[in-house]
Amino acid sequence: MSDLTIRFEDGRAYERYMGVWSQLVGEKFLDWLAPPPDSRWIDVGCGNGAFTEMIVDRCAPAFVAGVDPAEGQLAFARTRPALRAADFRQGDAMALPFADGTFDVAVMPLVIFFVPDPSKGVSEMTRVVRREGIVTAYAWDMLGGGFPYHLLQAEMRELGFAPPKPPSPDASREEVLRDLWIAAGLTSVETRQIAVQRTFADFDDYWTTVLGGPSVGGKLAAMGREETAQLKTRMRAHFPADAAGRITYSARANVVKGINASRAE
Image (tube, rainbow, N blue to C red):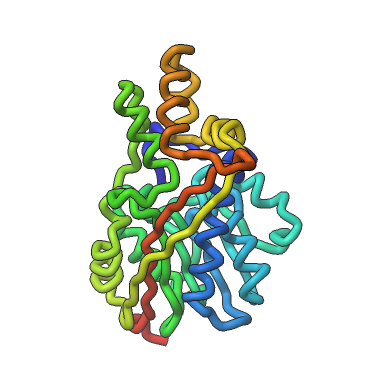
């Protein structure tokens, strides 16, 4: 689900870098989705289980499965007490290891832009969901400035340290998500945008967090002292601290849902 230059292996570092953001947008996403209880869920690209845990805590599921290509992430997910009964499997979003019609809800949280063939990923979610089941996703608005670390990446590029890009950033656009869902034969397709804010204790908290990011951490570590200082100065200008030293900023995700009306019983 990711290209060869972005690796998601450290579940604990990823929890701090992206898991918190995922849960912030996930809360609003689940309020909008309003899924029925006692449903069978599959979390496609579950990573370290940050959103999977929310499914268990908020949706009273009958069963939850998670699929991700990174065994390191899955190992972290299995340590979450709420997920001891979940079925985590290493696998590919474009070839899900489950039979047709296994689930009531398929969700792809913050993943579709990492899928090399997004249409195949949506097709696979549709395949494993029963008739009248829900196929849904949310994705950072990668091309519209919604990614939580887009300003950091822009400043890194200005300094000649371009972080790797996901293979399918266009798939995160609201209109593209709608088209993908319709092309998969899903009906009652709806989209919307969700904005969230996150507060860091201070700039050092923010900086330590981004050092653990799989798409930027390696590049940041390779920068020299002078370049690092220059980057920090630029980022401080973007994120002025409040009286307590905290910094707060926003991110934005596009969300989509549809109903599987194409599968016979």
